[in-house]
Image 1 (cartoon, helix red, strand yellow):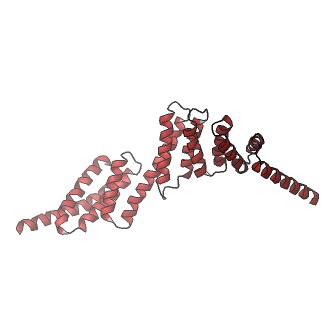
Image 2 (cartoon, rainbow, N blue to C red; image 1 turned 90 degrees about the vertical axis):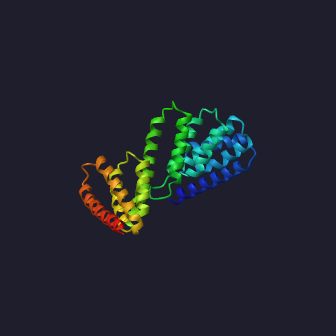
Image 3 (tube, rainbow, N blue to C red; image 1 turned 120 degrees about the horizontal axis):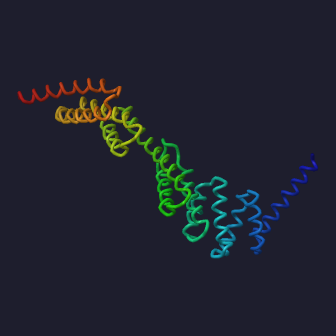
Length: 268
């Protein structure tokens, strides 16, 4: 067992020594051969440094193009998606007519997808991923990857939709009635066929009722009228909603309050 370990240690040291020797040498043919060997053996992190040297020395050659391509793919394989996104995205700019340009632009977009966090976190990377995928579909409309791109875009958009719906819910839970009303109305306008549409409408109406009740007298009549209009639209769109009766009772109470306010105002 000790002999096996010793042999492995010797091989490792020898391998490292050879790697460092090639890394420091001026023999670019040997560098390229070693980089290709490391890449084929999935030793991606070690291949990157050598490919970078080759590209820097021969940026306009076939070896330079292949090296830059391999760097991007290597970073992608080791799941360093920020670095991979940079190299793969830059590849299409540096080598726009390359046979690998389409693949690199797609993988660059996929790096943005990989960096997209869950719905509750910052949406910037998700929006970037959508834009990058859209760029790919615009540039390669006949690509066999278009269907995959469209499916991924739909999932990313749903992630953004979920995040915005969660914000509406949060305003409601924290009793920020005005913000809940404004955000709910914005959501309904932005996502007309959302699966959260009925639930958002209910939040809108509940908070519209509470906003009207808690308003100063000078704003009560206007906000009660707005609530009644919102409810009328809601029952047309969701006539079978389980929340309709409860909300209807709340709206009727508001209308009685409005009548009282208008009567008081007319008697003054």
